[in-house]
Every structure is written in C-alpha cells, then in structure tokens.
Image (cartoon, rainbow, N blue to C red):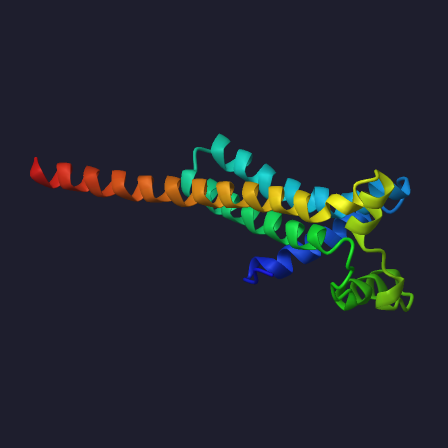
Length: 161
C-alpha cells in the first residue's frame, strides 16, 4: 500500500465518515467511510479552484489520488480480507467506549461488493480505481509543472524588459 503523511489523515477521515453516518441504514453506513474519504479532497479541489489557488488545488488533487489508491487497495482485498483491521478496531473502541476486536470489524468492500453481487470483480474494480488515481495524480503533476514553467517564462520575460 502507498504510504505517506496523508495515510493517517485518510484513515481518520474514513473512520469519521462511518461514525458520522452511524445512524443511517447499514449499506450507507459502510459506504460512508469511503464516500467521505474521497469527497473531502474532491471538495477541497473545487474550493481551491473557486479561490483561484491552482497550487492548492493541485495538492488537493494529489490528496485525492492518494485517497483513491488507498480505496483501491482496500477494494482489492475484498475477497481475501487480509487487511489488518487493528487500527479500525482501535478507532471504534476509542470512539464508542466499547472494546472492539479486529475480527468484529466489517470489511467495508467485502460487505459492499457482496451486497450488490460484485465480490468476484473486486480486483477489476480496484484496478479501474487505481487507473483513475493515476490519471488524477498525473494531472496534478502536469498542472504543477506547467505552472512552474509558466512562472519561469514570466520571470525571464520580465528580466528582459
């Protein structure tokens, strides 16, 4: 799994998504972790674009790409269920005040894929999400490179005159 400083942020946002939606029907409650984890950086992109802050929107796009990669890793594990659920169990124990064991925590994507009859497609869907994540990351890097190139060209033009 891709690991960087955004990993913990994505984990906390994901788990808070579940916590905030603990009162809704089970399917939405389970899906809410990923929905919030992806919606937060996507919303940040649009917020920064409205503020005309291209550099910040590129960072938010990178954050979205990392979030999508984490989601794809989790999706790809839906059938095997080999993900270590210790952190999730610890988060739920801490927020609920009740001791929760890792084997009691629901594997989100096993539950979601199984409920819609797509469990056998877990790795294919994960691959599609990885492709989208790669395109988002490439777009963020290309946009950032273009902004740097444009800034350098502007500085050169300014120094000539």
